[in-house]
Every structure is written in C-alpha cells, then in structure tokens.
Length: 89
Image (tube, rainbow, N blue to C red; front, side, top):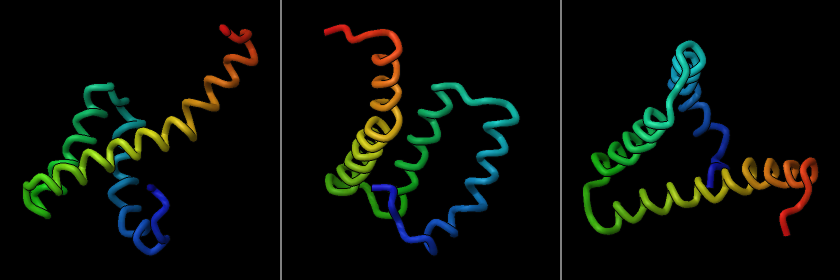
C-alpha cells in the first residue's frame, strides 16, 4: 500500500517534483503513463534480480496500487456519476 513513513516519502519528493513539472508542462499520454509504471517495475527487478518472487513483487505492487486507486478515486467518481445520472440497476 502507498502508506509509507514520511521520512521515506521525503526521499522521493524531489524526483516526484521533477516528474510533476514535466507532466504538467507538456501533459502525459496513457502510453507514457504505462511507460513510467513499467520503468519502475524494471528498476525494481534490476535492484533485486529477476526471479519468480521479484516479478511477483512487481505484479503485486501494481495490482495493489490499482486496487487502492480504484477504491480511492474511481469508485467515488462512479458513485457521484450514479447519483447525478441515475442508477443502471
């Protein structure tokens, strides 16, 4: 889950600020978003070695990030759209 301690978050602050600047200056396509996520997975494998377990670590992290994003962003958005537009069921 993305809830890491603040001292660890601080280590990522500067590179994330640089990335934020690039994204908001020129935009980001869904392919570029996929590229960035894939690069992070590749970095993990480079650091920890390629094995079933480390590949599984990357897949699990991506899946858990997806589920957390869905719960925190997509589900509330869909719920508000349902409230505005009416339920399908």
